[in-house]
Length: 302
Image 1: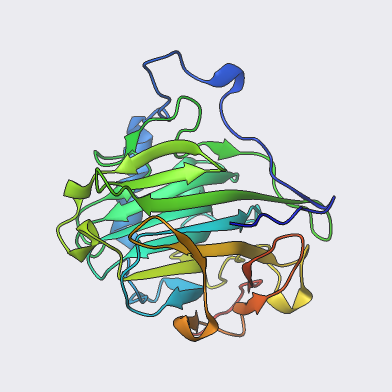
Image 2: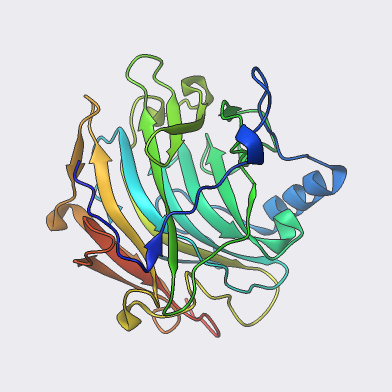
């Protein structure tokens, strides 16, 4: 893989607990309190999640998706923003992998209902039966196995991008380990956060993903106006203004990385007056296969 050197307006901020994190033999887990479980249950009640396509009027998506195939992982650089959202709403920048039943998503989210704050969080979600009654956010149920001493899922990230200024991003990798067959999550070049065990999944996703997707997601169950996605700006405003996902690569059965090809990718956008996605683009500070996405929200018809 070729890493292109970043310019002075793009940085990757080291995230994690201070002083190396937890002592040897222990891992950090975001403290789960009674209110967290109540919030999570409330969120499940008011939302119907989706697999490869949204089926709920409470969601809007702007993403690029691989055509159906066999995929064993992906790597991508996700831009980190902190848009303002109301209660009973959230906004996320995501990678999705899976099939119609099993699915993993990972990225950044602002979700006041789940986290009781307005900050951006490192976030994941998994399901084994199409988002019905299995899986959860982060580690609010058994499933994801934490191994990092300093990077817990759900951790707050208080630094974010500046409009037309400094851009902050992080490299995410999700891949199937060829020996254990578990789905692993890495941040940066080699920081292993943890894994989703193979036995969580009972569909083809136990062996491979049928599709991979990258982009933005917003959820709204409370108000007439929809929340912003990404930076809250449309992609045509360009780099440093719109949100990006760059250096997108796929991982094959043998663990080799490769670039995407235009003919493999489908663009999917809902409520085009509110959100959009553009790509692939060539932007030297980010490099590789690169997309811009997002929008201001507002009144967003289906």
